[in-house]
Length: 138
Image (cartoon, rainbow, N blue to C red):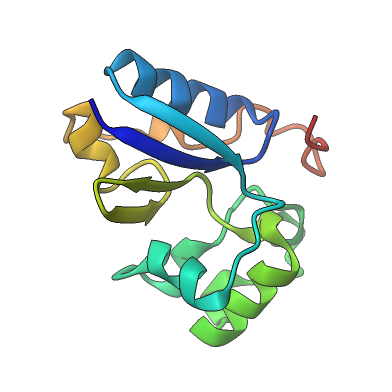
């Protein structure tokens, strides 16, 4: 069993399904509120190591969906600054487990925790895509 720190948007249906998968795989999930966590640029950047800047963004964020923010056109420093100002822009969940960090549910350490190497797209996207903007956290 591994203790998994899981930074989520409270009330997010997709995050709830992801936490359930980790729990069913025998892990202890410690959920934290991504939106109220006191992030620093350095700390946040650790979750994105080795991935392109555009992939750091939550594609379901109202500002991304509306076209106000174009992740493909943003440099790393500017991306982190935007995310510190508006945590809804951060790709969720942020995961910490066994000394590893990631953003999203489709890379390590998540794949090893779930003992899967297949596609996890079915638990990545928004469960309420018709809701625009994203419903407020409960």
